[in-house]
Length: 566
Image (cartoon, rainbow, N blue to C red; front, side, top):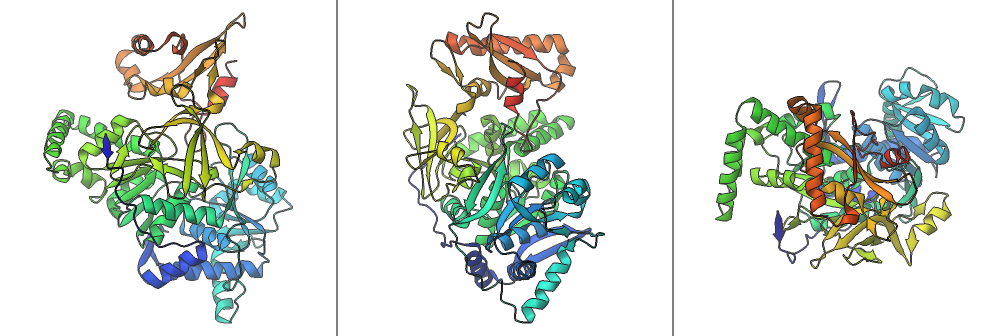
């Protein structure tokens, strides 16, 4: 699936350089227009731009009374309105915002609180119970603020602080609203372990974050509303989701958890959704499962063929032909904006056929996080798109295929790693940030990801093999759910044997039986091997009975697989 209009114009977007400027502009432009819609205690709540901005000022004023200053403030909570108020409040102050993954273990949370120099913790009541030992054992946490029910008088209540801040503002307290801030210093400290298990604190400035959102808006049109799905501690959702839609005066529906996704899509009727491939694939599978259960899968395939034919002659009947699917997604749903990993091209093509876009991009936390994105009329499902404005990319030391390490320079690039000058120095070369990802740039300027530098398999003959490339050949396999390719050194330590470990499709296992399915998978691997040079071929296959261990962003912990095999 390709759209080749490289030269269509970028969108005009008003420039802002800070959260305070963003809030001020939204108050002036949108005022009482609804910004957030969410559920609380079974009730649907709406918050306007004016109300949100006021809540930020109230909370900020209350935090100043607690001695906010330049303190590091951690936030550990499920997606909520209160999460967003805290985010804006701290970023727009002189404090440092430290978002924490809500799925981390107590040990993981304690580690981030310590190495992140956190002295104030905002936490939901549910997670406060889970993290009780962490809170009580950390003497450096001076203030704990509970979102929701609070039974501990030694902790502050989020709701009570909002009320306190409101009273202080009415009494003329301007300690927060008149703060002088610097948008180019450390403002957000994001800890990411990726798939290596090593936590590093990515230092982002307020300008990094805001400029990334504005430059993203230059690249793509966004529709009237979005369902906000991804965990807010992910920079993708917090930056190019919340900030972009807020800046443009769109409505943001807060999805409380993934279990509520289908219901919220039908009830809220959003136009857009930012997500990871897992969400797109889950919806894709649900559509086909529903069709098969109703014995309508053949009809669906026929309609897709008809739709393609009509589109070739300029007739778009997709909303009509696939009305039942669109209705199941709320009726207004137009586009997935997907990051975190590649979406399988055949899934992108399926949604294109039924009238829904899947715009993919490339980002990394160290780049706030967006680097490249496919544009509405310049799109290729196999690529990550082109760089956003004020961001440049290059390929370092490309091989004969044009592949090398992706390097980034621009407004979006981090300040460095917190208290880690060695890692910071290693991450930059001549002012370019070294992503550690391997890719190539085509003649149209589009980026294609082919692997991770740290995962490359270096053979004795000097050849490099990128495991992600080999894995991608099985993206559309009906027999394989997950596959990891890695080297295993032979008994004589003479050569690395390229090995594939496979988690078979469990539905197909039930249909064919374990032995027959494994045979089919081996045949499929043989077919792929036949089209590869000898040095790239998979020499050994092994099977597993359960999914690979994953990070909280649903990426396979490759290091755990590889380290366990060597």
